[in-house]
Amino acid sequence: MNIAIVGCGLIGNKRAKALPAGHALVACADTNLDRAKSLAQTRAGCLATPDWRVAVDRADVVIVCTINNMLAEVARTAAEAGKHVLVEKPAGRNVAELLATREAAQRSGAIVKVGFNHRLHPALIKAREIWDTGVCGQLMYVRGRYGQGGRLGMEVEWRGKRALAGGGEMLDQGVHLIDLARWFAGDFVDVAGHVSRYFWDWEVEDNGFALLKTATGATAFLHASCTEWKNTFSFEIFGREGKLQVDGLGGSYGVEKLTHYQMLPHMGPPATTSWEWPFPDDSWELELKYFLKCIDRHETPAGNIDDAIAALRVVETLYERSQIK
Image (tube, rainbow, N blue to C red; front, side, top):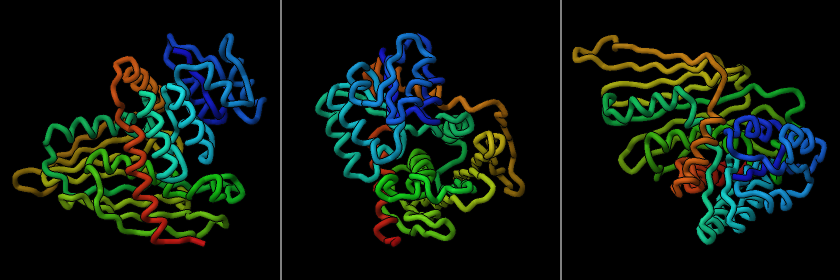
């Protein structure tokens, strides 16, 4: 298939490097033409353009890696034209933008995948495999923390401007936590918590706290933060008979590790098994391969636009209750 990338910054370059063999990168679009040219020159015959509509027209598949205020417009337009779309999370600034993308895809038959690459991290793949065996028993609750320390000048970047970003840390890293929690627990029918701005001098929140409950009473407690100072990822799934704990994502988040704690009949210290993945993150490549396979098989992917809508409904509820000014 012919593939176009819209948005040629850090994530656009990651997506280009992760493209599987046998597919052609035919167009790169960015408002900064130099960035588009820099990426396009890595592929023979690839067009560089400042007009994303030109890139969309040339492709069968469109990968959208823009900042948040353009994600939904590009994804919706591509889907309306019958192009299959991989759009980076959160796929838009609010639920209304995502609903428009979903409606366009439903009319045209386009397949839309949202960039929930954390589902493809090896520790989380292994955790899901173990969980699905039933060995950990009935789910009781999930606990997740995802945080970064920020960087000098971050308060003047686009992420701190509400009109461009749509929200702050809960819409950024928090969306990954919500998606992973739903992946294990199912839909949340009760949303509590709040978002706050503690440190960064910008228009959005720098911390989000969510307490979510499913119809069966399973609970998720999630904290997304950009005042973590030391980058952190921790995700724990607690069953009545065992616990799965994922720590780290590689790089500055530390070596990715899964620990399985299995309750023994006499209780006491559990049987403990651990796995580590010290090699580079290949979730980007795995997600693209999976998405392209879904297109080939005409299957709806996991981590789709419905999953993104469900995650953003949680975020919007927290925003409505917090009303940061």
